[in-house]
Length: 253
Figure 1 (tube, rainbow, N blue to C red):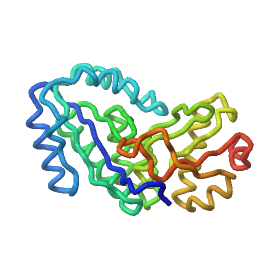
Figure 2: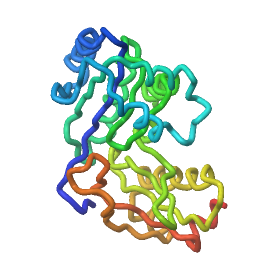
Figure 3: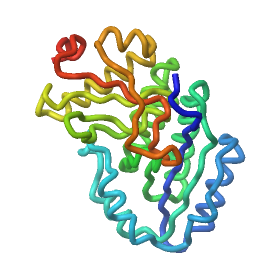
Figure 4: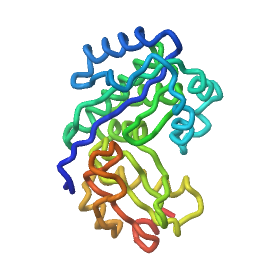
């Protein structure tokens, strides 16, 4: 089900060292030619110079779940970057979302193995340290089935938990063809607990379908109006809202 005809796409932000812009672009373009059809370097916004906005942008984008996997070296790399390359992915429907996201992850890891020093998924505003990106890439390569691959891509390119008033929620689940998940703050003061609920419900939606997941958790699917349709974070599949009294959430406590 979709509330909009908008089709999501990946926007990757890749940082490199000073004087390495052309080399980094060539490496990324080679990867696009080899295994990432439909992806393209955004020549309008990419630049052979540092971007003063990057430090603040990464500061608010670092993964909030695996904080310990980000190192001082990762943070220093953002401060010391000398160029920026943006990569645009093709527009995705539900059927192609996981496969395309797996390619986006592979492309990100390729860049980090070939001169890039930091990376961020702009479509949900999520950044990981280099080691974490590479681990996610290995997890994707070793995924035994579509469910495992979808979960890895979701962990790579979505962000949670974020605040939405009385709810904590995800952003970026549209990149694997799923609605966002909103969980009541009244359930727990521990954000990791709420994040685990968000992840559990996402797994259920992918494996069992949205309808069954809504019924089991007494949830409701609604459109999300926080972003305009032309915003990369806009989720055309809406959001699943779960309140404190929902039976499924009570079982997760």
